[in-house]
Amino acid sequence: MVEWITAPDLTPYPEALAFMEERAEAIAAGQAEELVWLVEHPPLYTSGTSARIEDLTDPERFPVYEARRGGQYTYHGPGQRVAYVMLDLGRRGRDVRAFVQQLEHWVIAALAEFNVTGHIREGRVGVWVERPEKPRAPDGAICEEKIAAIGIRLRKWVSFHGISVNVEPDLEHFTGIVPCGIRAHGVTSLVDLGLPVTMEDLDLALRRSFDQVIGAPS
Image (cartoon, rainbow, N blue to C red; front, side, top):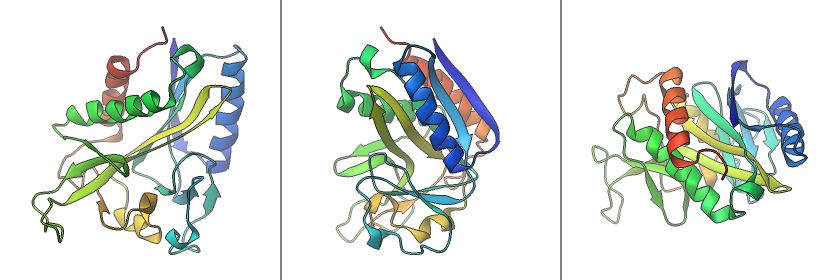
């Protein structure tokens, strides 16, 4: 079985890192169940293993933490659901690329419950939505904005870190970084799309779609 825990308050990032590392070790040792941990953080920036310092455009704005996950700079803050997935890939096929794709499809399936169509774009990490009501790109392409980020790390074939989905964060807070190193596209949220979605609504959708897309190990 996969355990689910929802943190009741804002979780300090160093506390989250310590908890994930401890739980991942316990899962690898067969001493704990797999876990999906749902949290919100106070405003902060994290740097992944591919982060470029020039993409941290306002380093004094919020605390900056080295996450040691894949990816570049990411913002976390109130109104954003972070789902940390501590799953045993040793029992799930040992295919990292397939696992990341599962996480992408998990987010897309959850968004579909609110009639939001999420897209995966080559060369752009995360999940994107089209904004046809906004000005088109210089090449004539429909405007697209990021609604969810994905970044994982493995230890002894156990994953940690995971996904973040924007429900109603302060989108202006993203301007202190170049999110995931992508300058040509903006960031959006479910509420910014005009949907009265609550964190609890998203949590239910994530739980249902997890069972459909990822489920228990074979």
